[in-house]
Amino acid sequence: EAGVAQSPRYKIIEKRQSVAFWCNPISGHATLYWYQQILGQGPKLLIQFQNNGVVDDSQLPKDRFSAERLKGVDSTLKIQPAKLEDSAVYLCASNQRGHGIPGANVLTFGAGSRLTVL
Amino acid sequence: DQQVKQNSPSLSVQEGRISILNCDYTNSMFDYFLWYKKYPAEGPTFLISISSIKDKNEDGRFTVFLNKSAKHLSLHIVPSQPGDSAVYFCAASASAGGTSYGKLTFGQGTILTVHP
Image (cartoon, rainbow over all chains, first blue to last red; front, side, top):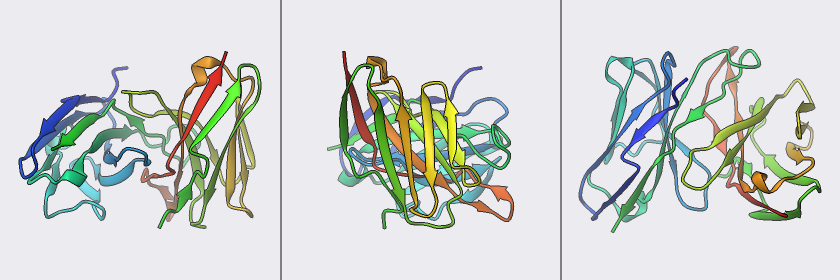
């Protein structure tokens, strides 16, 4: 089974520029997540999709961040304009409900997209 | 508000010995707990999990213990191997109305180094 694909792996931009990250989840996984991991911290959920609908975007800074999941498969996360504090690894994850213990969710993560804002 | 805390930023052990990684949580709604392992330049990979109805779950060299009254869980690795050297994240989630959600709250991570 192919894993979660993300691109680009690395991106360096200047502040106030824009950037977009792409994610292709595991085939058949209905739920897709974007997490932000700042150096020295654990991943933090930005947005959760169920198929092409948003389940939770309470921690997404909506003045600069946007995300979409057209057709319920691929997803794109955009930052515009970027700030210095947006420097982080952006992790995409997907999951298959019912894996393991009933009621539990185990997320499969991609390798991440590392963003550096100068 | 840090709902999941890993108070040890790093841990160093000798090959063959036991590694114990600790995690504390504050949200009593959390009912499912996971450990992820992360190598540099890779995404976190799932290691082991435990439901709040259990106090122990074992998978090969890895055992997770849950103490609900203390809101504490730990990951034991026995015996530790150099290939176990990585960052370990504790994560927690809360079910809602019988339908679980994959919204995970992560700790800050503990860097484990296993020396040959």
